[in-house]
Image 1 (cartoon, helix red, strand yellow):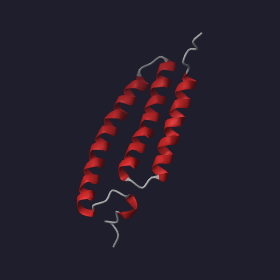
Image 2 (image 1 turned 90 degrees about the vertical axis):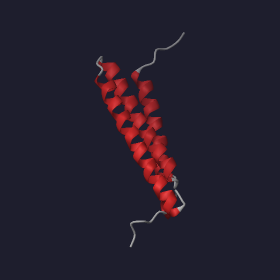
Image 3 (image 1 turned 180 degrees about the horizontal axis):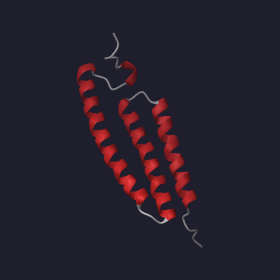
Image 4 (image 1 turned 120 degrees about the vertical axis):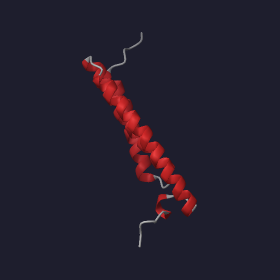
Length: 103
């Protein structure tokens, strides 16, 4: 017998995505991996919004998730553009070695 998927299942998956994203941001040195971890965190938020919207029977969570996806795409495009420019100048994408703003 199959059990129905409840909002708790979505929350557990969202918490796992949030944990993986947070560990990725705190532990990695590569800027590309940090951006990917940030996307995981945003996807965890989207999953929560959609799950709670479904639980309450309205589409507002899905609408907010679409806005967050739009902002995430713009953030990824700008972030990757900045990383390409930094790689051309410093020849590295390691966050510890990028010190353009230091005197």
